[in-house]
Image (tube, rainbow, N blue to C red; front, top):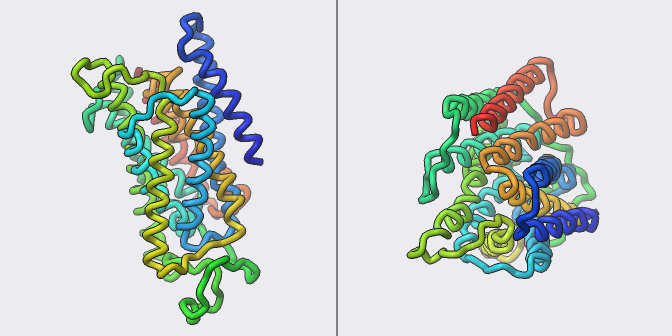
Length: 369
């Protein structure tokens, strides 16, 4: 399966490489590339955790390391296709920020589920990305829009939708199966547990605390995800300043993918090694999570490469609202239709209201440019 994703990514990257330095491309062509990139990105973002939804991932630390290894593999292929553009170490910081948010994913899935979790972190992802660009936080240039009222209303609706999502009750749990056991586990450490499979810290929390932890982690994840593009934007903004150390840096967003993804893999490796040391070299390593985790990572890597392309061919103020909100709909559909995480008419109505608000907010933000 991952070969199909990689081949699709190669076609997109190859086309973008040909167009990067070309002056013959029309606005229609650029818009086509931009919206195709958005479409692929939202599809893969909304579905990339589906392969591991019913797979035993334990406490998630081994899974996140496998996922990040797959992400770096995608970046390596992209770097070869792009003829190894200059490596800017600062872009690795964005990867480190993202990897820090990523370690919360498995606890989020176990507490509030795929659909609700993604919707919440996508909302705060959008808000952080919008606010940092709109107001010029962290040393990047503030983006001016022609219709600031629409822009503020859109961001406000996204914030309100995130609050509404908190009132959707979901069931993120899945029944345990006796045949799923970790590759590396110490029976003496888990002697008090009736089953050695999938014993993570969130499973020991009471229902209300578990939900509160899941909601809080989703907010933190969204804020971190929304900050991951800031180092790349900083480099691009300072590329035109003669006295800057980033003078002459590329304006093609995809040239920074390898550096950012390297930061992701390096940070995730450090976290995994710290985790192994904390567990006294007895980590939970689940065999069945390896291939699905790798597929999930490839999907995420392709989606992010397409996001970089969308930022290049479209304005970020257009691509960011689309790519941070639409995957929530796809994930919610997976959660409702396939995994039955959300049940009851009341929850459906609240979910529909929240989704309408976030789509309206995204559209207002996009039309404000």
